[in-house]
Structure formats: structure tokens, C-alpha cells
Image 1: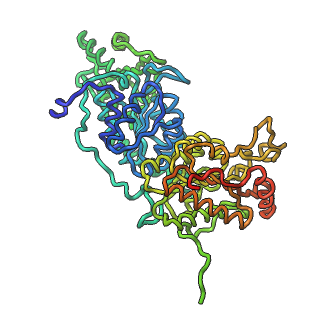
Image 2: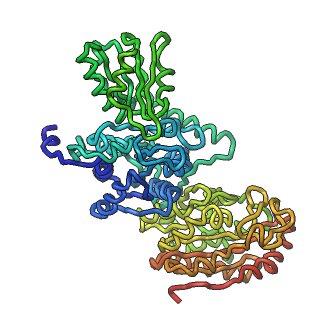
Image 3: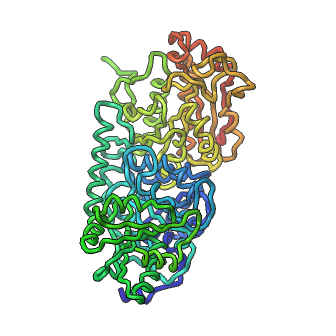
Length: 353
Length: 247
């Protein structure tokens, strides 16, 4: 840890994601330009060739995600990144990745929609990211970083978990996190975990029977069986992967639940509230799917007032309402379309609880 | 003493196909398999299947295969070949897949000169979904979605993919062949061999457009469907080599 601290450099969030991918062993990137994530492909276009990797600017996001699928089928650690409309175009391919049980990392530096929208920060793609997004009964594991260091660390982790589950993993961040600069250590805490892929990758049927990777199983109950295999993976994720952070919760009588940039702003509000004698705490989900349900339920044993803060009109709110028991008061504060909640607004809402 | 002069290529499995009587897929599969055998590539090949009747080609080819989303076979092939240039990669696509929903992927993969082989089956209809209009449906031809025949002013002209692609610098080899009689099948075999050879030589994108019959959706007997390909398709889609960088 000491060595990591000593090696801190001032780094942009998007660059931290890109270098995190390289450090995780990502050796292929396919993508299409869209603001506010362009620093990722720009950085990787120079960086990946240095480590013997492949960078290719695709003709569209449709092509990008399917190039990702092709590279993933050979066992290569592969990534794409985009925003809003581009992530929407990729949904068919993400569904194919999940159905074909292929690992890949997809980065969404969100822009505010709907439609073309704008490039201001938002958290409006929560539903799209956590509900699968494309067609079919599938899930993607979703990380929500809250600072530049986490943009790096969670990208490394995303590659490990994508391989562990043979499933797409998404990094979901807003334009503030993508564009801001902070000191960060661009060295992983440990060497990235590798998984044996020799049992399923396509690399030519040399000395083994030929293989096929597909998501369509027309015969018998094959399609239903595939879905149960996927559900087993999601159950394992629910058991093993939920991550969250708690601050000031030990003596708290009220709780702010927020992720990413919203959690940072809420932290300021909570400090101010505590100066005024209001015992507020913070619950920050780090994985948005699987959601840290057990940890949140445990907190509601002694905390009965909750304020959910998001940069949207109440998407994570639906998950919170489904998790917390009856008798817990849940209020909401959010701003859509690029609006960013202020710490004073959140403080006022905390007082009103 | 008996000598076996005609046997199943090693690159095909011993599986009866689900294709209709008179369909060209079985013949085209065999020709691709013969090329794979000829160059000794069975253990070094990945085939990319596309949405359509041939989506189940993994049952018939004894090589590694992957199933692409509709229209995206050449993006998937790009991802495989770029990360593993030592593999031989081919896509097997129909007219709806390659020339309609996947036209952008086709043009850009060709223009980048991706070193992959494309086997493009042009039968002028959407086969698997029941005979709707394809981008290659002939003018005046009736399909389930052009009940009065394809109209120049309503649906536009059939797309001539071999001609279009041959104009791109990245394309190393481009030929149109047909399967309507044994002589043409032999020509098609030569073209597919040449396409694989171009990939092995690292010349660029290689493309073989194969005119093929879909008697079922044309509501024709298999023999009549072959005649229709010979008379109608070959007139609209002239056979020949459009580009060969080696020649």
C-alpha cells in the first residue's frame, strides 16, 4: 500500500479506466468515438500497441461490441467503451455476450438522455445497466466507481470477474468521474487474477474436438437449460460479489444512499449535517448489480430514515424500496438531464427527514 | 481392389443436413470443407455463422464455429482475426445478413482489408423467415413481402455485392459463381479455394458470391429452381472474377 501511495500521479478518470484495462491484461479494444469518453480510445490507440495489444476504431458501436464478442471468443481480455446512444446500440451484442457466456468489459461514461441528450453528467442509465439492458433474461455485473482511483481499481476487478463468470461486466460512471483529475496509483494492488479458459475458447480444433459458441439452442429444452445455467451464475454473483461502502453509520439515525458522484456530494452534506448535530450516515453501493442487499437490510435494523440521492428521477430508488422493510421512511432527491444535486439541497432534505 | 474416390471431407461432420431439397447450402458447405481440407486448416480455422438457415452450420462443419448476431458476422470475424492472425477465419452469410442489415460491417471489413474469407450465399430471398424480399431480390420478382413483384421505384434495384466490393482497395479477391450445374459447382470450388489461398497469403479480404437456389420459397421444384438460377439469376448477376490481386 505504501508503494502504491508513493506512485500517485494526477490522472483523469477516463485515463485511469484505460490504464486499468492494460494493467488487467486487456489486449484488445474496439470502440467508436462519443463524448464524454473519448480519452479512453485515444489513450489506448497509443498504449495497446506498446504491450502487443490490438486497438481498432470500429465503424459503429454495433460493430464495436461484435468485434469484442469475436475477440472474447478466443480468450483475449477485451474492452469497449461508449456513452448513452452508443451503449444503447450495443445492447444486442451485450445480450449475445451474456447468452454466449463470453467475458468482456463495457465502460459507460454516461451522458444525459433520453435521445441524443447532452454531455452533462448523469446517472440515468442505472436501469439499462442493472436490468440487463438488452433482450432476454440476463444480467451484467455493474461497478459504480466514486473516484479516479476506483476508476482504475474497479476496471482491473471487472476483467477478473468477467472471466470468473464468463459474463459481461460494466463500469458505470458519469461525465464528472470520466473527466476530472485526481491523484491515483496506476498499479494494481495485486497481480490480476487469471482464469483457465482452455476448456471453452475458439483457437482451432487442434488436438481436440471442434467447438461451437452460440446463444441459440433450438432443440428440446436447450434454451431453457441455458437460462438456468445463467441464473445459477447470477445467484453466485448475488452471494459472492456485492460490494459497498459505509461511512458514519455506527451512530447514524438517518442514511443517505447514493453511488458515484452523488455519493461524493452527499458526503459533504453529511459532514455539514453532523456539524449541526444531525447524525447522518452514508451507504454507497459499489456494485449496482448485484446490489448490496444484505448490508442495506442490516443497517435498517437501527436506521429508519433514508434519503436516496441520484442524478436521475429515481432509478436506484426502486431497488431501495424493494429491499428496505416496511416502517422505514424513504425520501428521494434527484436531478435529471445533467442537473447535479448540490450539497446544500441534500442537507435541506436530510433535515426534513 | 476397391478404391474410395469420393468421400466426406474431414472438415464436415457425419450429419445429415436440415436443408431443403435443391438448396445450395449443402453443396456450398462441402466446397468450403474441401478447401479447408486441401490447405490442411481443419485444426486452425474458426467459422462465423450468421442468422439464417445456415446458422446451424456448427452441426455440419467439424471446425470451431461461432454464431454471430444478424448482420454482424464480419465484426465478429474481425475480432477473432485481429487478435489471432494465425487462425484462418471465414464467414458464411446470406443476402439479408451481408447485404441488408450487415451492409455497414461488410463494407468496412472489406475496406479495412480484413484477412478473412466471406462465403456469400445469394438466393434472392430471406430463406429462414419464409421468403420475404431480400436486398438481392430481382426486379419484378414476387416474394411474401412484394406480392406484386419488386419495383424499382418502391424497393430500388437489387444490390450487386461483388461489383460493389471489387471497387474497394482492401479487397484482394472477389468472384461470383453459381451452383446450378456440375460445371458451375466446379468453378465455385476453384473460387473458394482461391479465396482461402488469398487469406493464407495475407493479401486481404476475399469474397465469393455464390448464386444459390431456394426452391422452397420460390415455390419451385428443385430442378426448376436450378433452371431459374441459370436463366434469371445469372443474367441479373453476371458470373466472373471481379478482382484478383494475385492474377
